[in-house]
Picture 1 (spheres, helix red, strand yellow):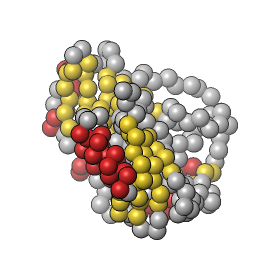
Picture 2: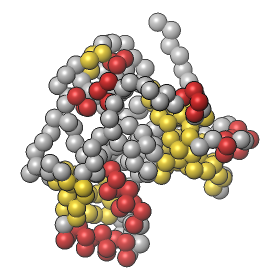
Picture 3: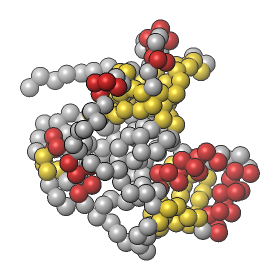
Length: 241
């Protein structure tokens, strides 16, 4: 079998610090992140004309899959979370990370490309990429050919349901203190609510008494999930004093 190597053109810098909590598809939440370009690809000339496109395709690597089997051992079937994690279907009928080539494809909304010091950054929203994800390529999204309005999407035809997000009295107090002390801005909490509203649990977990923990941006959040809501019970800053 011929091995193919590809250059890494940059790394995603996102508030998603762990896989738990990342939306299962792109553009479900409008969280901002950016790609830090590497040399020699950190050249503004390479992006000339990109501002004429509203969305981009990102080709990237599943780089933090600690349970990934040897890629030479092909797994023909996987268990998609959307099907409850207990039904197997063909790997090529899913977007599972357990693939012959650990590559992902996401469409994101372009915000701006700008120079920050010596760095070139591509700011986007709607990414579903873990912080530190290697980027292989960036391509413009072409509406007339890429958007198939009557496409069928099998078990993923409908958007996931949205739960209401509630705050305990303690969490509300902690949030106010973090905002007042400038450790965390209100935008971070707004983005966090969007993510939690999608119910980040694996589909097979339905324990309403379990306390879940998740790191997002510079906060650590504890929460419980009921049938129709997510309740944040505690928030801690990850910034060292």
